[in-house]
Length: 589
Image (cartoon, rainbow, N blue to C red; front, top):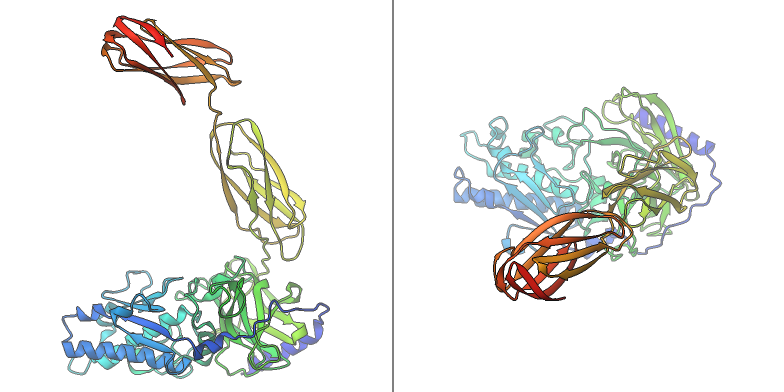
């Protein structure tokens, strides 16, 4: 608690130091609040229990009891969070297609042998997976789900599977992991969303974990929305794919590349604000009144430092800090208003050099001065408060450039391309262009951000080339992501004149009437009809300089009046004539 008091003191002191001069205006005003959805929206969770029916070590009565306990456990937890009647939990296959979320109980163990789990949620999916084999087939843990006589205790087994099912569904509503630690076999200070390593098999079997206050807030605010797209929560859905957050934490394998930090909120009106991101619209404005963005709720802002809403997870490399917003809560004078963060109101403190040689900052202050909101993210406060990799970097990045230009062309011809990138801070940008032919541009510029940058290029040889471009600011900063496009460079089609004549066999005069020399021009003479013994089809190739004419010849032996078809590249001519032995007479083209 002393660390929290000290941190609050730091925040108050910094509030006096960083005096704002800019005015923050709301993005939009939306009178509705997503939390009100709990009064009108019923979400159906379908649990596919087919795998339980196939277990030979359970009798019919045990199978029924186990399935009912799983459904009830999920239902209890979501009723507690959302209010009774706002969730329907069923294993009726008739409701599978219309369900908002699905729990697929898999018969075996997690195939991810490197890091097996009780359950998994595939990012962006409305279907979670819970692995029955992890509970029943693993002899190192399944004793926690059995009676003293070795038979299955379907209540304990149902508790464990139900807990895991509700946990994975929670991820799809943007609820991240709670990393608060506690005694492994007790439920104090932990919740359904505690990371899997903190809730072992015995705790899963014997405790009815519920959502903590923070998880309930997130669930209520995102209730009714489609599944989020991130690996841990909605965070990956922000508008620009660059974040100023940390690298991955080596000792957190359950979260991968996330950083969990404690935040302190200093506000003039506690409870009047909520913290979140602007994300891509998923509801066409139906829930929040805005057809362009969604407010992805992360936490309420409060002075109560004991509230469960202390831990937030950040996913490195997938955020843009400028998309942080605060929203007026329903009890505030401005319900539903979104207030964007001014990027000049971000201050990084306590720099260190981590073991990767990267300078990171342990404290980040973000301020919404007009609303009296200030937030401190403390990267040192998580867990043992000693991870040397914890921290934030100041990685501003321009947007990936747009590419405008032709997609087809000819060799040795100049083509103009337009590149454009924007940058939050408004600084000039350098561009690096890889034309795909071994002649990159190197860094060119600087050019004003949001300016059309015209650059010509010539390809010398035919082929399909990948054009890549990225930008970086004029001052030291993060490069943008690459943007790519393709152009197909091909020789122009030949321009020919062809005349078909007879005589000894079939003769065709082919003339190059274009302005480009032609090499290896394929030609074909084919006779259809009559009685042709030799020369029914003849193919060769020729070279033709500009203006040059050559004769293609086909030897024939036969009798009758065939149709003569001549093709050269994409050109085709036809004629008729009379074949008598080795001669062709009366040719008409």
